[in-house]
Every structure is written in C-alpha cells, then in structure tokens.
Image 1 (cartoon, rainbow, N blue to C red):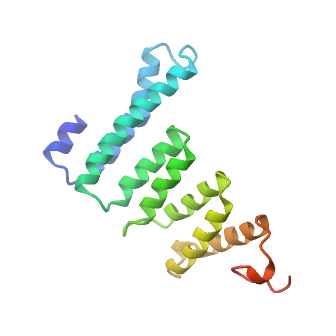
Image 2: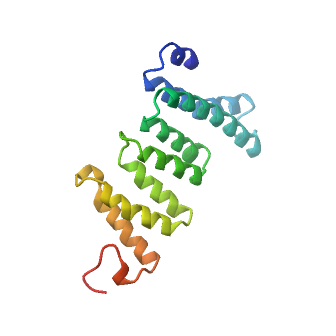
Image 3: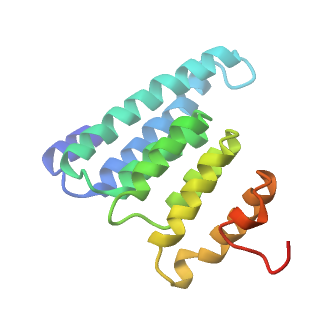
Length: 173
C-alpha cells in the first residue's frame, strides 16, 4: 500500500517516511513473531531479518530522495535506521552529516554526527567538525551553541590540546 500511495502522489514526505519506518521497525517484529518469537528465533536469523527489512526501507527512502533530494527528514530517517535498528554508528554518522547539510536540517543532526564520531574513537575529527560548526550556527537558543562549546572543551581535555592551541582559551592554563 505504501508503494501504491507514493506512486500515486510522491509529493507528501509523510508516506515515504512512515512507510520506511514500518518496513524497518514493524515488519521485522512481525516476521520474527511469525517464526516463533524473539526467544525462539536465533540471533543470527533476527539480524538477517533486520538487514533485509532495512534494505527495503533504504530502497524506499532512495526513491523518495529522487522526488525530494533536499529533504533533511529523509536523510535523518536513513541515519536513524542505521543507528537504532542496525546499530551501525559509522553509517549513521554519514547520514546524520548528509542530513545536516540540507537547508531544512534541524540543528541536532550535526551534533549527533559529531557524537557518533566520538563514539567511534574519531575524537580529532569530531573536534574539527564541532569547531567549524560553531561558525556556521546562528546565535539562537535553538542552535544550542553552548552544548557544542562544552563538547569542544571536553574534547580539548581528552585530546590534551595545549592551552595556547585551544579553540576556546580558558582564563588560566
């Protein structure tokens, strides 16, 4: 039905996004339940079902991107599936970055990208990204620059950046 609705009218992103969510999150649960439930279906089989359904959800999102190439919500949806369903931080980070590059991107997309870099041990990359991000963000409460500055300070401590090279110089070394 999702394919029918999106074929008849591809303009609303609602059906693309919610259709991909059903395919990635609901259908695997239904399939596992049909095969006996989480306690009876081996972990490897559950992962295979998750991969199959996520691939179908990604196909649907890719089709949506043909009609809505600049829609941050579609990039975010891919990122969320990688993060929450497949537990793939590297691919999720890539898609959060792509989402953050769209004109209608929410500010949190870039922050999540940086956090996922940190989670992968890519602290230098996260530090450089956050420093650049502070110049791009407006001075509005919704941009939450304070949080970004805190994360920069934390990374400076973690990376043991000398005082004189720090992005935000503290009052005393």
